Every structure is written in structure tokens, then in C-alpha cells.
Image (cartoon, rainbow, N blue to C red):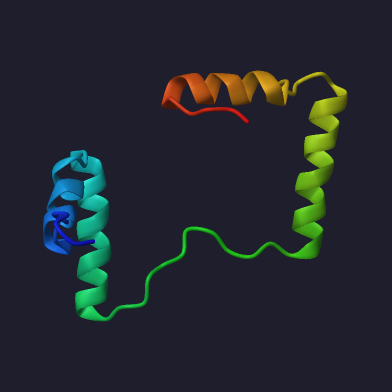
Length: 88
């Protein structure tokens, strides 16, 4: 693209960092420290066993049968409004 100014990756990275909250910056710092120290990253979730998975499915179905679920279209609309997203 001749004649078009393009931000450098450094400038783009600085823009992203400047837009982050303190909590997001701390999370990035924590990951950076782990990488710099070459420690394995701890995963917050572990793979469920088949019994655990189906237990969760059964719980969800029981909640649905009890009328405890929410209409997914309403949830989608609320999230779209909250985060400025367009629904397809």
C-alpha cells in the first residue's frame, strides 16, 4: 500500500496496553513472568472425566426441567447490548 501510513507493531502494542485495566495488566504481567522464568503455565481447568461431564449435563437438564434456565435469545440480546455487539 503505497502512501499509506501503517502503525508499527510496537505502536499497536502500546495502544493495546494503554487501553487495558489494571487487572488486565496484572494478568499480562503474571503470564510474562511465567514465560520469562520458563515455568509451566498452570491451567485453571482440567479435563473432566466422562462421569463428571455427564453429571454436569444431568444437572443442567434438571435445572432446565425445573424452569431455572434463561431464554438464550434474551441472554444474547442482553450481552449484545452490554458489549455493543451486533446480533446476526
